[in-house]
Length: 449
Image 1 (cartoon, rainbow, N blue to C red):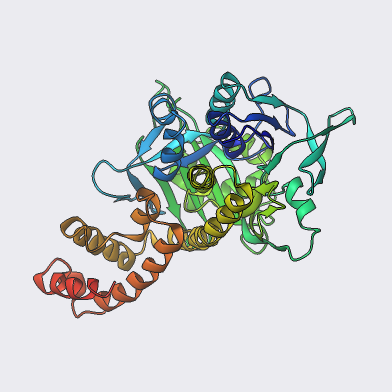
Image 2: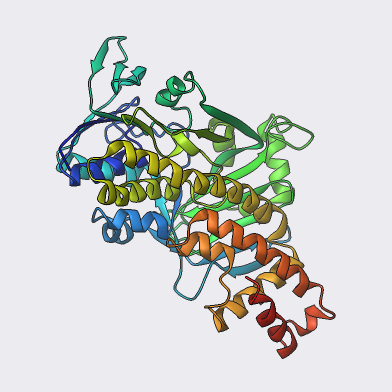
């Protein structure tokens, strides 16, 4: 490809990875980041410090030579979910086949690693530079520092990788025929911590994602390398049982004693965490088109922010970079054709994973403790292990099968739901779920997929 001067707004996870892809192809890349350098200022904007890195994200990291380093140095594999009942009973559900795992990684640690790698490969990163204006016709942008001083940056191409509240997208929203929706769900989240034990040990199973499902809300916990767990309470923002109603530490502690007693027993800093950690909102962003004039493009959360319940937000953004790189091979210097192909291919998948994330929220909070749901999963897992060419559970398609598009996975998942409803309606299914009759029926239904 002919060398281009390319600017990226946003040095977060997706912007940093995109810069590695572009630098690898010989382009001159500069990133402009609104926040100060996280490597010098250990602040993360109140966002989750844990993320679930799975096969789509790993595939994207492998293309720039970082997969092994990330897995070796900062990832903790989680092979399944551990559900915690109110009474403290534990139920384990594997995520996939034996050996398959999603990986708990530090958002800040991964971001800093990629920024370091980007600078090693010639990318220039400018911090404390907020995007104030964009010229969509010429791919130029005005950036403002903390003193209010402005600088205009000219580029051949400009990528908006500046998150759910993208400044680049806000300019695109003012153009003709730009579709945009922003939906806040009724739930928000607050982060809490289970620290390491007195001898530096993990107080919960290390290689699992822990869930306390409680119907209209839930608590989850992901492991950290220092043996602590980052816990996230997903909870209604308003209403009778909500962040608004738990307006004192005493009320919150009393609520946890009733609903999450085993978790509370491992939270010596609960009072401090509840008071100091913010109640944060969750938003879904959809928009189209993602590109303008073959010179400006949105990527990652700037084009498709989703809720975190499938653990695919980062993975989907990384997959954007992976797909864009593949299209560079196909289109070469035809940036107009390349960017049009990029948005047309990725938009259906972005919409699909947004829908899947909300679906998984309902599953995690309402169904992971439900005997009917657990039996259905058991039947699906057993059948897919015996006949992998005939049936792959939806979660496995999304999480462990990067060759399957999100849009194809959700379509197949809907057909599987219909077929499994027939299986679950069979007489005495709870006693006969592992019988030859059920297997034969599954084989017959699988032919319809």
